[in-house]
Length: 245
Ligand code: F6R
Image (cartoon, rainbow, N blue to C red):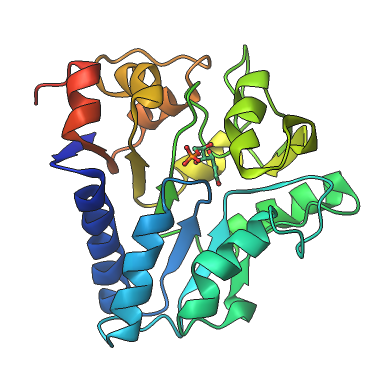
């Protein structure tokens, strides 16, 4: 595992944006696995700037998102489709027909099967971007006694509902289930890049970078089984974790 420690969160975002731009320049029709949440937003801003400055062309890029809330339509301002449009797709020259965010509406099992097919369609992701939950979840694979390999419906934990309530008017408005890629879908990507910042992520990142233990109670630890992972953290988080490398 490559642990990259930067001087600041802004530098972490620049590092990851640069990785993505280099990939897209080398392989214009690459497939990106994308994430939502607060963490990647400044990184997406850097991709927008690079695109608008003519430094990277997204016209042939294909994307598949990790997850989507169940029960809210794509037009809802907290849906992950809406998030991706407003934080990235609306501002770059990507063809939205080449972007996929699972549907949270309609038949959940059919939606999970459709997401699973998209993960494999035209080959697996060249790069999968991840954030990490305070409890170590990646996508919406929640810390539990068992995990799932493929796309499925997940009941969100209290910790995740509470953490995500900052985006909603009240905690009761946060959906309690979500559709998510499974662990096998994430591990299938050719390269996995996880960005984390903030002291709330300390325990999760400690479990990920400080030893070789793999536990379903910190799903991110399964990334230790992948040969091409970058964990990008800033010095503040690295110090809190006790990471010296
Ligand atoms: C989002 C996702 C989640 C988030 C995680 C961290 O698509 O899959 O796993 O990455 O909940 O969220 P933030 O970045 O808001 O702390």
